[in-house]
Amino acid sequence: MNNPFESAQKQLRDVQKLLNLDDNIVRQLMQPKRVIEVALPIRMDDGSIEVFTGYRSQFNDARGPFKGGIRFHPDVTLDEVKALSAWMTWKTAVVKIPLGGGKGGVVVDPKKLSLAELERLSRAYARALAPFIGPDVDVPAPDVSTDSRIMGWMLDEYEAVIGRKAPGVITGKPLSLGGSLVRDYATAQGAFYVIDELAKKYHLPKGTRVAIQGFGNGGSFLAKILAEAGYILVAIADSRSTVYREEGLDVDELIAHKKVTGTLKNCVGCESLPSEAVLSVPTDILVPAALENALHSGNKEGVQAKYIVELANGPVTPEADQWFFDKGVVVIPDILANAGGVTVSYYEQVQNATNFYWEESQILGMLEKTMRTAFMKVAQYQERYNTTYRMGAYALAVRRVAKAMKNRGSI
Image (cartoon, rainbow, N blue to C red; front, side, top):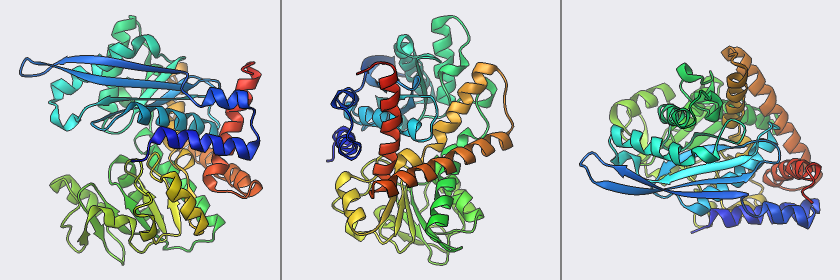
């Protein structure tokens, strides 16, 4: 299995060659600045004590406080969290928001916890991390299997520990606790602006076909936004199956079906295929919106899409990425494509700090400008160095981080 942190380190070494970066800078960027591992003893509903392992990787804060989500998943590993914190560092730099990169996780299957157990675990994690986070230090957010409710519990626990209000310590909160409008669909909305710029650059026609792997928060919102903009959604997959319809899927109908049945399978008028089949259906754009390493050496040759837009974090392995480049498949990297979420998280921080909250239209206007500008800047670097969009994005991001480190006297 591909090690995500080794992939992140390899990408950095590739960028070093591209930019001829100073060795002193690169050595500092090969490892997180700080890694925290905590044991979380939780009293279960039956009275027993279970001990869960939690992590927080604080990768780099040269450009601003560490920033990144918290995931609850049975497959969370330290290397995964370290890799994600590195990618967050590049992501915030790509969209030019004044933040660094961090990431956290707890090794747990949240589906096996009661609501009360989930709350106790969330509060225990926030309590254990309280000495290491804060509005000007490290700002967590939701990620895989966490949501605004969990962020609300964590905020409440953190404020109880420090004895004062600090809404800016966590983003992705409920609106009633200082959350921001747009945040629930910001990742998908940002990806749409990137796809729209991609379509303009490559002159893609109206009715361009799209397949999406993953129908969670990001994938479902993006499907709806794309359908409303005139794209044809030919295939969508969840963890159980792929639904396919050459003429195009009714996204609203799929959302309703999933809500009632818990799966996309057996939706009326759709062909049901294995979950993995979404990666190989005939389509123009493929959007992997699930977990890491979805596209790898074992399945890359089945991909028929001409464009891949990474809504998930790290869905294309380095080997597959090079293969796609050699075959002329354009891959838009996660650190650009899914940066809409962290961008609106930054807006949430600003609103918390000023105690002044913006209207939805204002936030959308700022997000659109940020994402379209970032795409064009990445495209410039991609063309300048005659490389992939991933390396173009990395070149832009790492150069910005390196400049901040040099200005701080880090070499």
